[in-house]
Length: 267
Ligand code: NAD
Image 1: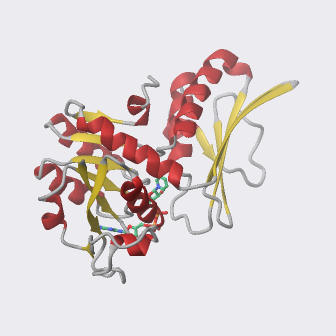
Image 2: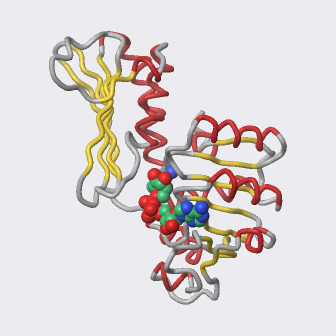
C-alpha cells in the first residue's frame, strides 16, 4: 500500500481525493492536512468527505504527517512550496494540482526535482484534457497559420484564478506550436474598439458561473470552416483519479519533475 497524505483535505478537490484513496486497493490514506483556521481540524477526514470514518483526523501538523507517509497529494490553494519542501525532506513523492503558481514557485519545484525530489505537477489531471493538449498541438501543426486560434474556458462561480491553469497550459502549447510568446501574444478578452484580429494573437476567454466543473474549447477558425476541440469535466473524480495514477507513477519513477503527459505517456 502507498501511504498517501492529502493537503487541502477539506476542500472541494481534497474531499474527492480522500474518497478515491479510501476506495482504492493500493493507496492508504495516511494523513489529511488543512490550514489551522479550517473548521474541520480535528474531524475525521473520511467523515468530512462523506466516505465514512477512516481514523485519520484532519490536522495542521504537516511535519508529523509527512514523517510517516510515502506520497503527498496537494490540491490546496496556498503554501504549496513550503509544504512540498517539507514533504521532500521526509522523502515523500509529491503530486501537485494547485493552479496559479508563480514562475518563481515553478522554478522552486524544478530545483527540488533537480536535487532528487519526485514531483508530478499538472494543471489538469484528467486523461481527457491531456488528450486535448495532445490533439490541440497536432491540430495547430496540421492546420497552420490560416486558422485563427481562440481558447474559451468556463468554470464554477467560486473559482479564484483566471484563466484556468488548463487554459493557460493550452495557450502555452499552442504558442509553442506556432512559434509565439505566451506573455505577449495571448490576448485576454476583447473590449471596445480593439481593432481587427492579428494573425499572431491567440484569444483567451474565461467564463464563470454556476457549478461548472471545467469546460475547455480550442477553436481553429479559417475562412469557410472551423474546427472546435472541446473537453467537458462533469465530476471532480476525473482529476482525483488522475492524481492517484500520478502517485502510482512516482512510486517507480526516477527523481525528476513530471506532468500528466509523462504519466500518460503522451509525449
Ligand atoms: P477549495 O478552495 O475548495 O479547497 C482548497 C483547500 O485548501 C481549502 O480547504 C483550504 O483551506 C486548503 N488550504 C489552503 N491553504 C492551505 C495550506 N497552506 N495547507 C493546507 N491546506 C490549505 O479549492 P478546490 O476547488 O478544491 O481547488 C484547489 C486547487 O486545485 C485550485 O488551485 C484549483 O484550481 C486546483 N484544481 C486543479 C485541478 C487539476 O486537475 N490540476 C482540478 C481541479 C482543481
